[in-house]
Length: 405
Image (cartoon, rainbow, N blue to C red; front, side, top):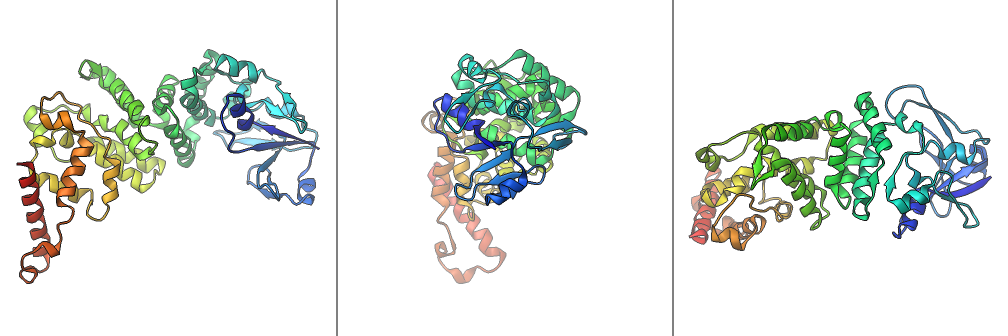
């Protein structure tokens, strides 16, 4: 039995990153031998063992044979005769194939160290095409490492397109797609994640709503300040990712620009409250991928109210209080934190916009009215039932009007 430290731990150390998780590869062992050593077996598809003391994962060396579709259509062989090379050759990227033995010696059978130095993401073998998850994983690695100059090798990008053309991505589960996308959104440059998926035609199968956004925007040549709206949305995702790691904020700031699909007259734009059309796309995306409910809510709020918020200086205090009611700030004031980084995107000379971001302005408005309650009534006995709600609304509108004037 031989045990090797494998994958991300070696890659991150060679890149100068701190190592958080360590995965181990066991060659020349059987499940029975692992169980005798008090390892705990987990995993449905193939045996992975948890170390009795460190609780780190130890996987038996294996080979895989494609016998179906998607990422689950494999037959696994865990024979104790499987060699280190046979296991590594079926992994995704060369930078993830470098291992270290128990003596600290680095073993690099597929030039992973060379590719780390050259800053290239390159597949190991043709087996790369058998697992469609790798399209998302490579896009995620590109988003994570692009700031270091990493790029995807042309031949690897070609294989990613081949996987997409075979429609293998259609067999991925919603949970797996969202898991990889969540990690991509957590990366240093999440906009790169979507750019790569667009390059290899993966958006059509994974995110048809975002694919529609990409194609429609380019077709119509929608622009803001001379910049294509799609490019502007990617720039905004990049900007916001330098400020916050909150995935809800990052994703919603990117998707809010879907609302530019429909054209408005100036009059209609200023009178717009909740824009339902683009929200249909957002809801479809969220329901299909089983995105967490609160993340769905933030995406819907930011996209549906995009035009309303961009023209908030022209909106009545009644409409602004209605907005606070709609997103339920009275019971869930923390939702305001998800909006705090929003900006004004339209050209303006308004002094308020020159001195405050949209998010800060919303925060200031809410602070004015947040403490209005039944205790604010001059005579509580005058109001009962629905009349209480109407009086709260009236007081909040009056306060906001005074503040704005």
